[in-house]
Image 1 (cartoon, rainbow, N blue to C red):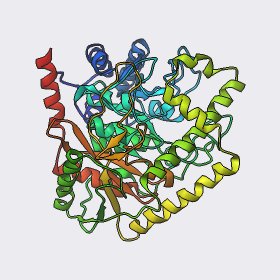
Image 2 (image 1 turned 120 degrees about the horizontal axis):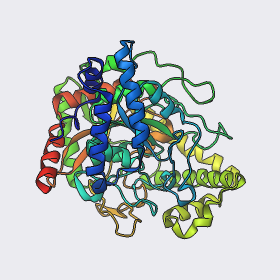
Image 3 (image 1 turned 90 degrees about the horizontal axis):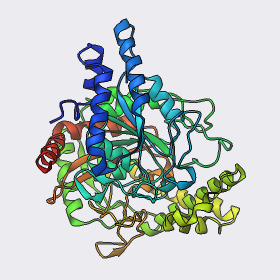
Image 4 (image 1 turned 45 degrees about the vertical axis):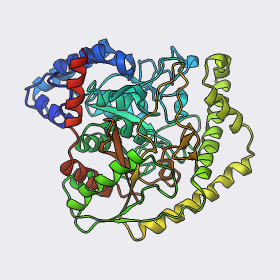
Length: 492
């Protein structure tokens, strides 16, 4: 068993500070493991070994100076292939950008590197992040390490698979409708989406456009404490992001060991009507005992959504469709014709483009009426409860397609669902900007991980972290990685 592969990032950082572990040794260990293990899961699509080793040597020299070190010093990190890293190929999983090398970092990558993290490569994602599955014509599907015939989920599937497989201790992702939480659940790792604006991003030429109001950047890690460490590095205001929030009044590290005594938690088995398969529902329900054991009052409720869940799935698709058309229009004006590669573009993405070209500007603005109705219905729950917990996804397994066009189910428990995102109980919180996380809840009888979604009112990330940390204390899931490692060794 690889000695460093599943060590928490916080422990690795401490070992580097105490000079018990060299950043070079850690990066070399990750690169070796990526070489051996990545072909099976397809988490990394670009590996920058030379650049990472150079950064590790610089980090090692800095350790030897005895100067104070930043919080992520020497820790390898994977960056989602939608987000730019200076000097490293960033494809957005599209043939149109197959050889694109950005000159500047995105804000997340910049802050992670300033905190001492070493970018080791780019992780797989669906084309332009358009679905809750990680598969594309350019690189193919990413698998959950717990079942190499099944998908890791998306759109941060490469990030989640890389962390679950022990390729890196930390990975960055983004979430516009569940893209952190869905793969977090299907890969058995922790993923945190903060309140919209908590982690800034700078988009040009339109600072007010593409990402508003739904895209959030965040961490994917194997422990809650690692996620908090990474999130606090990424979070904080930025003058060039008009939606970024002021610094949070409370550090999330203070919530890690806070007991849940007195906390009132609403448990919704279907989040207002989404179909959920029995094996997923059973794992989630059983996991609630951990929250109760830590002192919380957990009350099962029937959430009254203002419309059927299918209408919110359709709303998400319409809003994302317009954003994708905006993006392609901007690219075309910049001289990049993405549709010149139409025969190598996912059919599901082309369908979104057709949908996005139809609404008028007034139609698009009126979509916010439905979002407002949703906000009111969920705020009614938060009036009497500190948190809402539910499943993350309707299913625990998505089979990979042989032709690189993987999608989710079109039917769950007898109900029709949209195969792109309709089986995900996640997008509601993106519509209203609330923080939400997935924390491993347990395993199905088939050995597949299932996540518990934990959500709070806007600005209340500490409550989310406290509940996730309590779950980790009461029902630690790390032996699942050990079982996975032993199985890999037996398989050769």
